[in-house]
Length: 414
Image: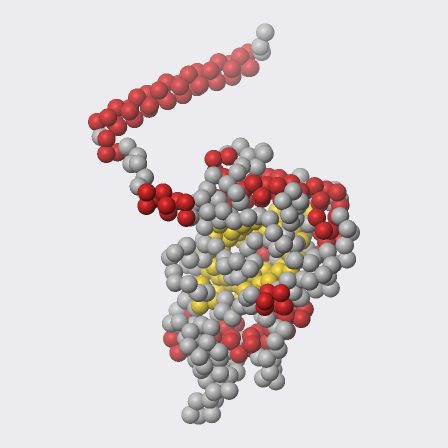
């Protein structure tokens, strides 16, 4: 015999369920009647052109397996999310290995349009839209795996311009996702967080975007200042020289810097075009240097001077500070692969904008390649007038894996 309270709850649930069935049946009848009376309201049969577009975008797939993880050498996709996790105190070396095995299996399935084993919404996995999943580790996680962390795997030096916030900084494990479809991205994020929660807690999430596929000409994206952003990246054999680690347990991986840069677009509005171009050292129209070759990839002429004897590409322009050392020389090894994403979050308080850049760079060695460049920018970049770094993290991107293996395998099976 059920207690009275349980019986009442049971009966109430039954009544609600019966009502739901009745409403569902009524709704279905109404829908079919409406469809018969208004055949134009039924879903149209997709045309061949529409099906082709779905195949090109929604059903496009990229392999999860390979010597390098996807999402570094390839041009970035329209949507990205970067998820930093903190290891739980009880997670040990074997737990970290189990997590990487599990997440690698999830990623291998999701990138191919197949649902992970525990997926309760498998239909959301059908259209990956070139989904990419990448894993990286912080200093603590590498040490937990029993591997000596690289000397550069630590927080960046304190830069004078930084106003770092804990909510956008640090992390033991990083999951980076990209896709041309935000639904595929959200589903992958949900699945990977569900399967990592026994081992990690959430530290921060940063969501960014770029141009939609086919929406803009080829070339680097524009940031929300309107500037072409991400020019002069290493490619081809330059990746072997400047990006990929060549030996040791991280061979095939690289270092990764994530910086959240707040952009004061309201003050930027007050700057005229001349001031904007002078601060960057490039033309807003096409990204070409103020002196030098045409186009965003044109070679800059840093020696060129105007009729008053001043450098056309100013001493404190972003371009000059990033490219040249204080003595005016260019250090060939100071090349990084930049893969930025824009963000535009909901304003808070009296703000009318909350806009910025998720700056992401990949390089072989943070200390040799990134830090000297960032130090010069901190010391005297005119763009600092309108930008403020509010988040910072450094990770090592793990090598790719073969089918049947898992990302991070080289750390555990040496």
